[in-house]
Image 1: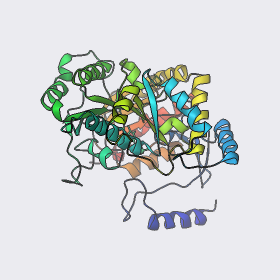
Image 2 (image 1 turned 135 degrees about the vertical axis):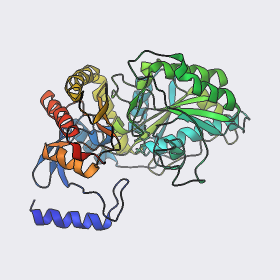
Image 3 (image 1 turned 120 degrees about the vertical axis):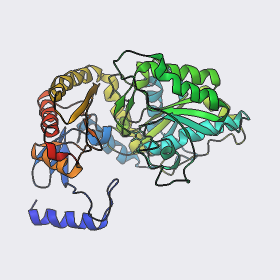
Length: 434
Ligand SMILES: *Cc1c(COP(=O)(O)O)cnc(C)c1O
């Protein structure tokens, strides 16, 4: 594309279009992507960037994937959409079968939502309706751990990290929830029972008010890219069961192999009462998510008054989204990605460990296809991205975190180049705010 054309487009964008978490006054720069293929983003200027973000955890099979493209084409010729009230269709039925088969045993009631945040809203509604159905109306709060991220809609936001999230901004408006400090024992470190004490105390003191506990299992994503010990989740699950508090696991980021297990809950051998999945479910092709519940949860809700679940989005179980999700999950079932993810993990461990001793780096952590450099100072996002683009890679750091979650189809050479760019940029002092 001509430089003047690109500039015209970018100027219009700057004046008129909001981007995620940006100001309309002096927004951070954006890059124009014209197309994408495999693990590469192609910029309008002709440059190619190796994608380190999987477009925020989603694009596990690569961009412009022939099988996913074909699944969409086939479905669009049958029907792009049909309402789900009073109607059902094969893509939704097939997808439900796959989800029930792939997720931990016991999760067998499926609610299709249009985005991850919505699936979290639905999960919390389920928990509240469960309490109401059992006549325990005082149980109307949710507990969680700090440093979490569960989405940007209202109730989802109320269980995001109380400091880093948007609580202060909407002070007094968000539902009040209970927070335990985030677990301190890292994944791979030696477990210590004390780590669970604050949550234990919280549940002991407030169980009469708690409908549910919600957590991201093992890996906390956008709230801090933190990886904690599986024993914590195991203990949490057992305690929730003993108080009949529902455990909601938000697998929206961690699901479908990302942490090295198909679902991160498997690290702890836990079967939650409710599970949210999203992001990679469609291979990153469109916004879609699901909330799965056990038969018990569904039965209790359905014997209440009202007996209906009070949610039903316009695009519920959209056939295009179901069709592409079916194909994405079929690919995972036909050829398990877990071995490849192990290889990605091992390459990232080798390469990112080269940042050890770098004075800007506080902690290096890798699990599955997630690699994180935690820095001492917050990054200057625009400067950082400029340096990454210069090196032919796409990475979007935030706060004190420079991290990657590459696609499962990335080649070893691409991955090594990506990791080396991370280490190189982490060594540049002026990409950090002072
Ligand atoms: C991204 C994310 C969400 C929100 O999903 P959206 O599709 O962006 O609404 C919720 N929980 C977790 C753990 C996520 O990573």
